[in-house]
Amino acid sequence: MTTADLKPAQQPRSLQAGTPATRMILLGVVLAIGVVATYYPVHGQPFANYDDADYTFDNMHVRAGLEWSTLRWALTAQDAANWHPVTWISHALDAQLFGMTPAGPHDVNLLFHIVNALLLFWVLQRATGSVGRSWMVAALFALHPLNVESVAWIAERKNVLSMFFLLLTLAAYRWYARKPVAGRYLVVFALFALGLMSKPQVITLPFVLLLWDYWPLERVAIRHSPFAVRQNDTSQASGEKRIANGEWRGLLWEKVPMFALCLISARLTLRAQAGGGATSAYGHVLRLENAVISYARYLGKAVWPSHLALFYPYPTRLYPAWEVASAALLLIVITLAVALAWRRRYLTVGWLWFLGTLVPMIGVVQVGTQAMADRYAYLPFVGLFVMICWLVADVAAQARVPLMLLRVVAACVLVALAVVSHRQVEFWNDHVTLWTHATEVTHDNWVAENNLGAALLKQSRVEDAIPHFRAAVAINPDDPNSNLNIGTYEQMHGNLPAAIERYKAAAELARNIRTKARAYNNLAYAYKEIGDYPDAKQSFQNAVKWDPEYSGAWISLGLLAQKHGDLALAVNAYGHALNIQPSDYGYLLLASALERNGNQQQAQAARRQAALLSDNLISAQHHADELLSK
Image (cartoon, rainbow, N blue to C red):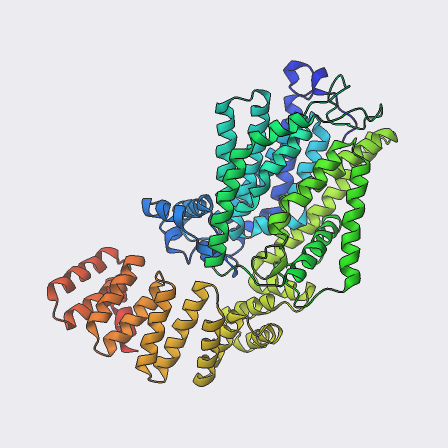
């Protein structure tokens, strides 16, 4: 942070903001190096065992890379309870470039975060004329521990991508504001649309642009003032600066097309979330209480970022009245303080930015079962950082605090944040560490317990995993995933009646179609193991009914049908599986069913397809024979 910089009107034209280009470049390089030094471990980290499968290796459209079919699917897909085609295309591009490995997608997330920090620095500096304060805001954004989740979690590509387009929109809007013509407005509109198609959290951007009009662009008319003060709007003179209402009406009308785009995005998002089982039915009072308390908790974590977790469980009962009242009082006090300091426009803009951009994620309309989430702070915290950096710099300038002391304090703060962030990044090195930490810093966290159990199960630590699955069910008996995992444990130990009951419960409780399909698939295997062919067949059919792209369930249905002589169903099931995910052994299974059904010519064609796909046809045939023998 620096003391007052020259106003843009006083700056030499060649310097474009009173700062040599070399200084901007050097500060940008320092910022990028700091981010890389903090986040470099992400390159070697695995896919997370929470959502990453749906966005990457378990998504057939993404795995296919950038094909026309993928692009068409991305424009209409509502998978993962969201409509975000640009994000899907981004993941498909990852698959095209890097295959199904996590290193590439992790590097891309990190690259977007670096670019976002640099863009934030540049956008703020160009709008305000202040280099030091803008850089400090960008540095806080780049290194704050709450933003680790958005970078280290591949599934949160949507977060860094939407922020990228939001910042480009702000840059384009300043360009438009200097010369409001249709062509420039279309650029702003298009960038905003891309942001919404990355993640609908940027739906509040038209309101952000109105704040941007107020400060730092100051597009509203100011009476009795010879010029608009940009960065040190302390207005020591008098309270004569008043906003012309007519100007506000014009600025609102200007954004009507963007508001229309917001309505379209909101409708698509709500439909996707309802269809994907993401909308939660918590009571109105509890949602309001949680929203108020979450605002206060975000403020606390902005100042003291500790006890961070990938998942914060939603409360099951109303909060104590004193806790809600304390949180509400904190918000009221800050709001009143900002209102009293109205001459410092950056305080108003920063505070309303924080409050407003959190609205879609604060839980008044609850999506999912989380009370709050670190990733939700990625955009809103920019408003808080603007408030802090500009206010500290102004107060320091008035108190004549030495610039060197201010820089030393700022450096200490950034180093401390970087150290905590680096530690937070390391929790993502493996799933057991990630979820163990979550259980340690939260209470009654059934999602963390279940995912910790799943991580232990993947390491073949079955007996270590089951206590966590049972803990998850004890906390939340209606959690389908932990019921499903307990069913798997019971089946592995030969307790098939108990496994069947758990699978039935999971299928009934699941609102996510993939979880429901997986429950039916497991249920079918349990029925098959006890020799109940009709129920096994019906369960496999239920699995593919709920998730028609579940290729494994189609293969399993085909195997079951073929074993019991229903060759027409077997051929049909294998065909569906191969349309979804072609494989050498799949074509060999199809060939076997066709041969038994007397279709020799089609069987030979299927074998030729298997040969074209296979690197080792003998191994593929051995695998197909093993499946048929079970």
